Length: 368
Ligand code: SF4
Image 1: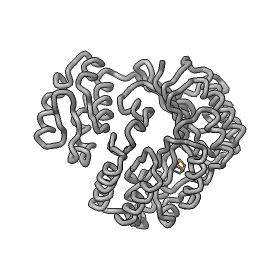
Image 2: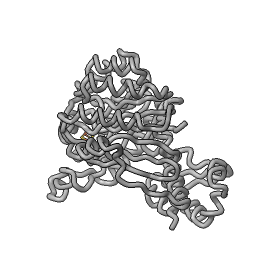
Image 3: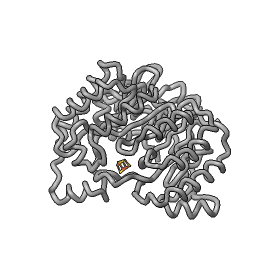
Image 4: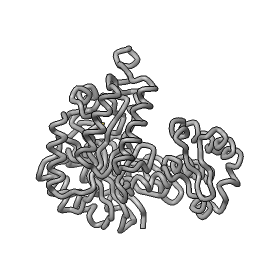
């Protein structure tokens, strides 16, 4: 059985100002897109997936008819964890009922910030009330595994704003929270605004203060940090994302979706219309890349170190027939001396300082 299936829905009402994900607002393509997607799903060689994640974009933007068509296909895989991303402003009672009916058992919602002025700044299509209304609908439909995405270091966000966001989100008791620091990506309106000096960015010390606040507040309120940016109640860790962090294989379907299968990474055509056309001819795979053993080891290290439990040495040995020290002895000693990792008998993990400097740590595990 393959572990995980990712399904990409590339549509959004409009583009958020910071977004560089593969999404657009060509909603007139949704019928043809869902048809192409179903064709791709039916071409898969697997009967079962442990986890399914429908993400985007905004999956809940699909109309009821298309959503039902897609869900009918996906429910055949009998997944233990079946997540659907739901964005406030696109959620209706009918859609939520449909998700429940077809076996979705985890909802991931993007809120980002508690303050309407910051949501506006980000170019989000919803305000806080839309979010609370959607959250209520989801809970009324008895979904008991809900993630909320939050974002810190938003231009003009103060540390107090962030504290207010974290504290208020805790009060509504989600089982899972993701907290990502805003990265200003090239090609986005935010990037242009920053270049032109129009963006009041958060300085690094405030950004770190925000992060430390989330870690201490969430951990002390029963949402344990299990990955650099992810927190959950016990037993509610996102199994789908753990597939990625443990560098296990997965399949992605839809425009721009990536897969990792039989030692190859491959990805589909990114543009929606290009994907639809390619699927009409049988396949939308744009490129396949063979992953060498060295690539696999490096990826295993820096993905695994994102998890708070770190790299399990026994798992490493079972997968690669080598001890992690056989390859990285020098690096491990150096990083340990710098107090960036903890190296004990069974695992290697980042220290809090190592989390702050994680990108530098990961570089040490890059193999030629
Ligand atoms: S809702 Fe998400 S995918 Fe859509 S534009 Fe905003 S950030 Fe991008």
